Length: 99
Image 1 (cartoon, rainbow, N blue to C red):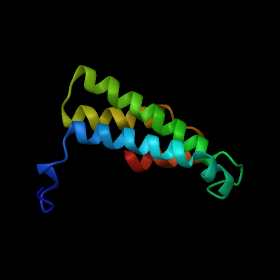
Image 2: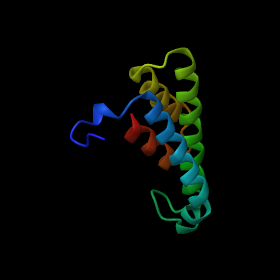
Image 3: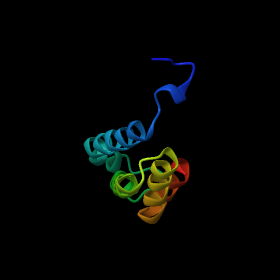
């Protein structure tokens, strides 16, 4: 693997796989994040909101790649999915980070 050139290994499938791995990790940590109850508003649902936002992002990238497996399509599908599926303040923040 050529660490000096991310384009050598970052491709649409890598982005999709990363998004799904992130969703799985958020699923495992969801309750723990909810229990922290601190950011950006202490309402106890940050983990759930971030998970549901990422779930929408995964659906977005999957749909986009089913039509066109190019890098622009993949990243725009992820960004659009998270934006349209953003839940709560933390979800909107995540969607903007991924955008």
